[in-house]
Amino acid sequence: MTETKHIKISDYSYPLPENRIAKFPIPQRDHSKLLIYQHGNVSEDVFYHLPEYLPQGALMVFNNTKVIQARLHFRKETGALIEVFLLEPAQPTDYELMFQTTSHCAWLCMIGNLKKWKNGVLKRDFEINGHRLTLTATRQSPEMLSITGQTSGETYHWVDFQWDNDNVSFAEILEEVGELPIPPYLNRETQERDKTTYQTVYSKIKGSVAAPTAGLHFTDAVLAALDKRGIDREELTLHVGAGTFKPVKSEEIEGHRMHTEYICVHRQTLEKLLRHSGEAIAVGTTSVRTLESLYYIGLKLMRHPDASEAELHVNQWEPYEQPAQQVTPTDAIRAVLDYLDRNHLPALHTSTQIIIAPGYDYKIVKMLVTNFHQPQSTLLLLVSAFVKGDWRKIYDYALGHDFRFLSYGDSSLLIP
Image (cartoon, rainbow, N blue to C red; front, side, top):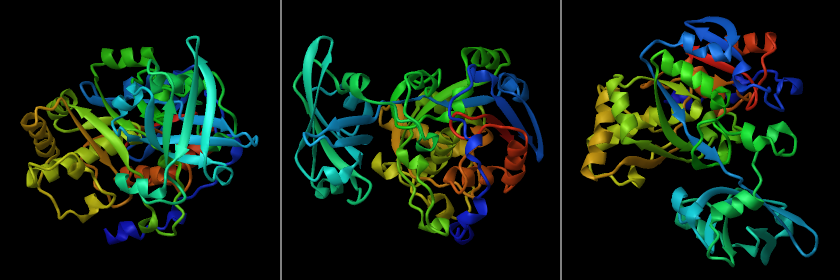
């Protein structure tokens, strides 16, 4: 672990010209370029040919999270515009319950133009289905953050929301007045078409503030081609937090605090993993983080069968602090299934803070579909760990062959 913690993030930099960042997606999702990295060899194709490169009968796992319209704008009587960016539910903490709430709820938020909102209540009037509505936002004291285990300060603020209509859910309010939070590096305003293009075609479970962008290339036609090739498909949920864009500012990665993200894996997915010997092709780094976290959750349950949902949280450095394990991925997955059985649960709900960096030993993910990530990012560390440090060959090829980068950019299939 010592070596991993002392990785210098400056070693994971590369020149990314502004004109290589895809500001908009191409018209047809599945016509993006596909880089294929296979056992050290690099080539390229078109994304809709992806199924041809996958072994028949393999299991492919997708993140079915849906991006919410998480930016809310309020104008003070002084004229100051305040942006409230929803990060994660505070009261209630369950995502599904949160979107069903009527009349009031609370979120942990980032605040834009915070210096103009020292105190007082923000108000916004609007109509939903012909009914006038007033939404208010009130910042609570930093002490409220201790309830969530967060520290007060520059990032998180507890904001209470109230509205004067019991027939309107918070989900409906966000649909009406929220704005989709496209990535900051696109340096542009959200457009109406982003509501469609910045969601995967299989998105279902609301909760993310950023898209699992590896999935943006898939179309119904590509999914049908996977089925025709005999690829098993399963879904899980990891709600992507704004921390995914958080740059590593410390010289060594030991100083970087990973963000927590909430995961849900259903019994059927775990059973399917068992039938595939605990091996999977992951679509995106979010699926990777969830699948690999399952192994460490299984280890905990083998040691502490009565662990609570909160105790199953995977800490940032946990994988590196474990002694060498003889436990197979199938043993770990079976332990998670046994936990669900004992507690009569249809799915595993917990959270992960896992950091995957060179020195990490992948347990479940055998192939990875992913986009091209920012320099000096934790996502680039994850890719480097997957290809055993060979990331520069991949990125040099992409830069030299007109690949488009970041969220709306092109894709790659990595086979170590």
